[in-house]
Amino acid sequence: SGNGPPKGHRYDLVVLANRLPVDQATDPDGQACWRRSPGGLVTALHPIMQSRAGAWIGWHGRPGAAPKPFNHDGIRLHPIELSAEEVDGYYEGQSNATIWPLYHDAVEQPVFDRRWRQAYHSVNHRFAAAAAQLAAPGALVWVHDYHLQLVPGMLRKLRPDLRIGFFLHIPFPPVELFCQLPMRDDIMRGLLGSDLVGFQHPQGTTNFARLAAHLLDAELADGVIKHESGVTAAATFPISIDVAGQQQLATEPPIRARADEIRRELGSPRTLILGVDRLDYTKGIEHRLTAYGELLADGRLDPAQTVMVQVAVPSRQRLDQYQSLRERVETTVSRINGRHAGIGKLCVHYLHQSYDREELAALYLAADVMAVTPLRDGMNLVAKEYVATRTDGTGALVLSEFAGAAAELRQAWMVNPHNLEALKDTLAEAAAADVAEQRRRMEPMRSHLRRYDVNRWAAAFLGQLGDPASPEPS
Ligand code: ADP
Ligand code: G6P
Image (cartoon, rainbow, N blue to C red):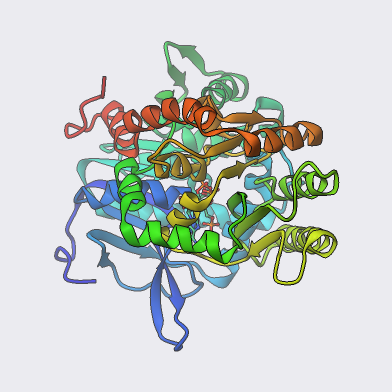
C-alpha cells in the first residue's frame, strides 16, 4: 500500500475487471492479507498495469463493504462492493453458472435464473458508474471479460466522451448457442457500446459480427459493425504472458535447484507429466487422468518410471458443478493410485492447492511432458508459461485443439481430448520423444512467444483504441 493520488483524481487509463489483481484473504495467523488472484486475466493485465499510471476497478473477492482505494505493487486499485446476494446472483449465478458454461460450448449445462440477471444488471451498472467517476475527459476505458458485458453500453450513456474498449478473455460462442441466453439482446447492446471489442480467436470475432447482424440488423464492413447506436470495430488479439519475466524466473538458481529437488522428491522418475489448471470442468482434467490411467493399465507407461503431478487450483468452490467435478477428479485419482501405486510411490500426485509463480516455474522446469487438454479454453496461459520456461528448448507440450493457444503454438503435440485413444497415443508419443524432437518443436514456439508477448497484445489493443502511448505494432 501507500499514498495514492488525491481524492477526485481522474485517470487517462481505467481498467475494469470483475477481480482486482489481489484478493482479500486471511493468513494462517488469522490476519487479513492480500493474495494474488487466480487466473489468466490477472496474469496478463498485472504487468501491463504496473507499467502505466492507470486505475484498476474490481472486486476484492469478499462479500460486504469494499476497502478504500489503495496502491498495490505500483497499481492504483479501486475496490467495488458486492453484497452476499450479489455474489450469489451476479458472480456465481449469471457469470459462472450461466455465461461461463454457455460460452465454453456448453460442456456443462448452463443454468438460467431471472433473479441472477437482475443482479448482473445492477452490478454492471455499479462498475460503469465507478468508471464514469474515475475517467479523465477523453480517457481510455478498458473493460474485461464476461462478467461485465453490459458495462460498455451503460458507460457510453454516462460518458459519451470516452474511448471504450472491451476484451473477452474466454471464447465467444456461435450464434445458435448464444441465442439461448435470455439476456442476448442486452448483452449484444452492452458490448456494442464499445468502440472496439477484442477476442482471443478469429472464431470469436466472426461469431460476434454474425450475431450483431442476426440479432440487431447491424451492417458489417471491413472489420467494423454499423449498428443502431454507432460503429464498433471487432478484431482478434490473442493474449500472452510476460515472456521475459517468465524466462527470467527460469534462469534463477534457486528455482532451478527447486526443480531438481522436485524430481528427487518424486523418486527421480524417467518421465514426469504435469498438469496445472484451476479445478474447472472446461480444463479436461478427468479426460487427461483417464488417459494416463489407461496407459498405465495397458503397460504403455511404466508406473515405476512415470509420475504425474496434477496441480488443481481451488476455484469457484461454492458452485455445485465445481463440487461435483472435484469429487469425480478425486475419485479418479484414487482409483489410479489404488491400482498402480506402491508404498511411498504414488502414480498421481494431486495437489488441490495454490502455488506461487516461483514454485510453478520450478514445476514447469521439472516436467518432461506438460499436458494441457481443455475441452474449450479462450487461450490457456499455462501452455505459454511452460514454453517460455523451457529456455533450453527441451520438454514436450501436449495441447488441446480447443484451446485458443493452439492457433499459435502449432508445433505442440496437438490432440482432441474427447478422443480417448488419440489422447493416450499423443501422451505416449510425447513421453517417448527424444531431445532432438522436443527441440525441433519447442524452438519455433519459443520464438513465436518472444515476438508476441503481453506487451505487444496490450499495445495492439490500446493502439487500435486510439491510445497515443501505444503505436500499433508492426
Ligand atoms: P484460466 O485463466 O482459465 O485460469 P489460464 O491457463 O489462461 O487459465 O491461466 C491460469 C493462470 O493462473 C496462469 O498464469 C497460472 O500461472 C496462474 N496460476 C496458477 N496457479 C495459481 C495460483 N495458485 N494463484 C494465482 N495464479 C495461479
Ligand atoms: C478466467 C476468467 C477470469 C477469472 C479467472 C479466475 O481466467 O477469464 O475472468 O478471473 O478465470 O476465476 P475467478 O472466478 O476466480 O475470478
